[in-house]
Length: 150
Length: 166
Image 1 (cartoon, chains in turn yellow, purple):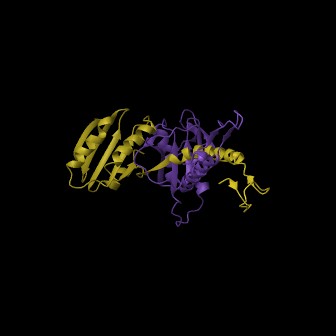
Image 2 (cartoon, chains in turn yellow, purple):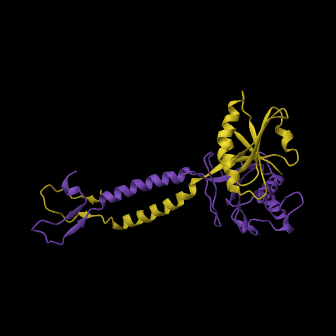
Image 3 (cartoon, one colour):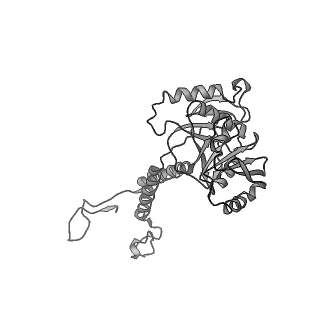
């Protein structure tokens, strides 16, 4: 790669046109560039989680026809899950955060059709990390999650 | 691979001096070029560039969608930043009470978002999208203020910025 022979001389011996390309500065540039790109790439790991919000006040009414799932984060580890069909409660239970996935799985297994939207609300002091975690768990079972409680 | 291309040649030949060492960096340059091309390809495929202005610790999530370009609202412990510009000082994630309207809207955020959004033409697919970059310690009350303010100014499609699970 680096050695370029332009002599075309087959009689042997080095001609004056033989030269060796000095790769050291190129390597230096590449090392700096690669380090920069690797640091920049750490920002690219940021992804998006889709969320909607219910209109303030008329939250529940907008999605209450048919099947609706309400998830309310009560405290750091307590979650209230309510499943309604045509405004009638068919399932209501308190679960711990760690048991939410299995609970939702069990609830969904009893239904013939899944709810399209889940409403997620939380107490004011609940940290965002917990909200995102619960939203992530709910999205494993319901395609769309809307934030409510406004 | 032939011995003379093996990279590091240490002069053991009696005709050469005992300290003659030459490092063949051609192979190393080849590796770096391949790595560079790979990294540039990865860099180009990411459509979203996020320059966080404060120390943000984003939450992690497994369910993700592709990043999009949209207006960015960033909330950290001390600052509320819109499009890289700090617009409000917060106190431990909390909005100052003088800035809050009774309906839970931040006056300053509402005005800034409305200004930056401009008149809606309804044609641009990203015109009603907003990316929320919130520190994982942000209380839900502050998040509600941001969401309500953004919704009030016409931005109703929320994208929560998260980090992928490792």
